[in-house]
Length: 75
Image 1 (cartoon, rainbow, N blue to C red):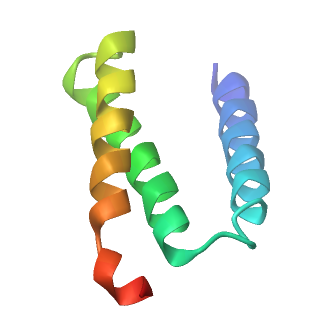
Image 2: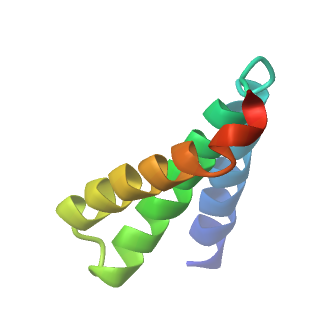
């Protein structure tokens, strides 16, 4: 079982690195939106026991919050 966990962790790490590489041309507000959506999705999944609705709802709420954070600083 530990071998599967190591492969899963490696796959998650690789996906994160590739995903972060795609953020290089984004504005600060876009990055905050993406980070908020990711954190919200994880939080929603944890709070609802992995429910799809909770994950998607958390991503939506987190994305909105991330979009609004420091909105005036980019102008």
